[in-house]
Image (spheres, rainbow, N blue to C red):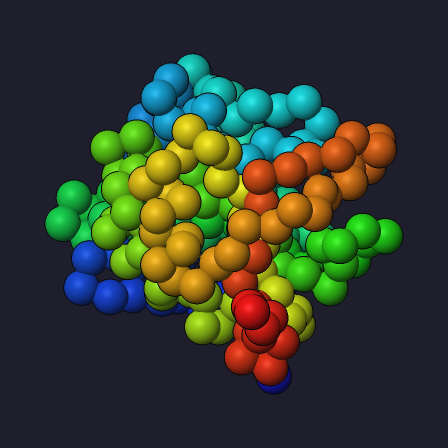
Length: 195
């Protein structure tokens, strides 16, 4: 089985390319992380107070450097979401395997950060459909969970179209904080039966 931390795969369709984030993405990603309409839809749960609102190139570069460091430490993978028509990153996807003492154990946690003009159901479906088929094997998990606040209507529609279901469970953070608004996708072998 491919070790995602030894050889990080790329994914591509006619509209988007997912590849490891690079320092060269700094200016493009600053447009994402300084977008006041986009930031409230990001998942900053369990991130030590970081809201991912970056307004300077220096702060954006520090974030990219940290993401690359975490990849080297096998903490998580952060892919740049490159719009092939524009030729630049319009967001990022983070994925990692989570082991914990709550309902989200042995689970792949997915974070999707997009520029606000890309926060459209069809766009989100196109992006996530690239990585979801491989996520279960790449991160040795039976479920993939992602956060979508009630305000993220387009995101919720995309998630539901892709087979995600809302979860009543909460994710418990390092400090005991309970985080809600998660949607879960079950692998074929772990498909939850809905009656």
